[in-house]
Length: 128
Ligand SMILES: [Mg+2]
Image 1 (cartoon, rainbow, N blue to C red):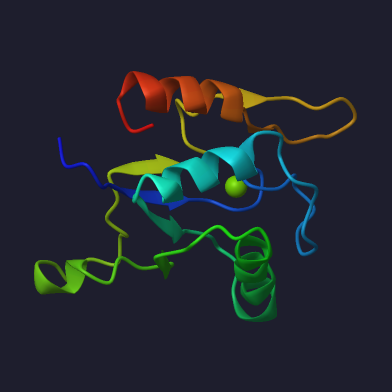
Image 2 (cartoon, rainbow, N blue to C red):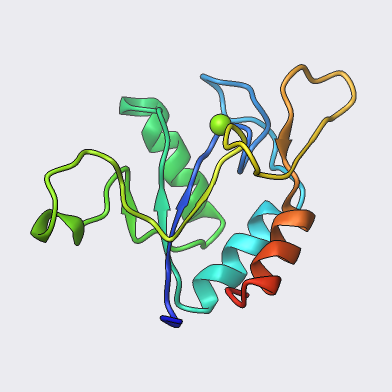
């Protein structure tokens, strides 16, 4: 397996609780897992529907937490082999992805990513 992978990360409901257009509270386990992925040399793409100032706020969220982003809403390498707008990644971590482990928070309508389970899955797949 390639030792460095491309991992696309959704923002709302994944890194932070749903509070769009504001930036919600950190989802438990997100920061430490993202940092660990980055330290392993994996390339993180912020993959979000946010745009303009709301996107800048999300990018700032990563910068403030010293989590290196490789790209935002694009894979800079895929233009050489496709014109598809779909962002290529080895993994997509997204609260809306069927199969992504989620958890419900009391009093919050939308579930968020369960990073503890994501971490277990990434370790099982030898990504972490
Ligand atoms: Mg989401």
